[in-house]
Length: 123
Image 1 (spheres, one colour):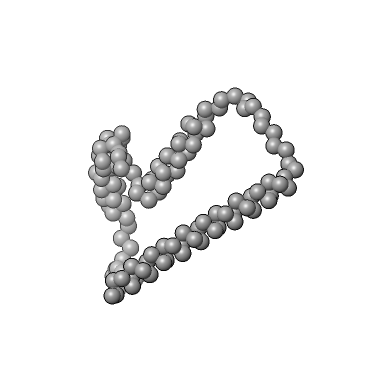
Image 2 (spheres, rainbow, N blue to C red; image 1 turned 30 degrees about the vertical axis):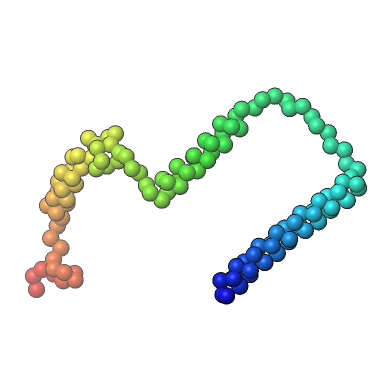
């Protein structure tokens, strides 16, 4: 008994949806015919000036350009760069040695300034 009731309710809901759709369609057609009877505007069809294919090329380029920019913003570089053996990896190889040498020279040349907190070394 419950299954028959559920099937009847589903069929009624489907029929109600179809009725609403058909009546809306006919109301739109009727409204369009009434508006067409009041039309006073003349539409002129002009010949195109020529074939302009660049729109077909520029739109995909713009679309892919936006995608590449979003990828670069959110995911960063994938190839090359420091540490990845990129286009100028030779420049980065000697960097660590030069930095350590500079650091050592800074400590060698620094004058003895005393203990922590600005206190003199010998009291």
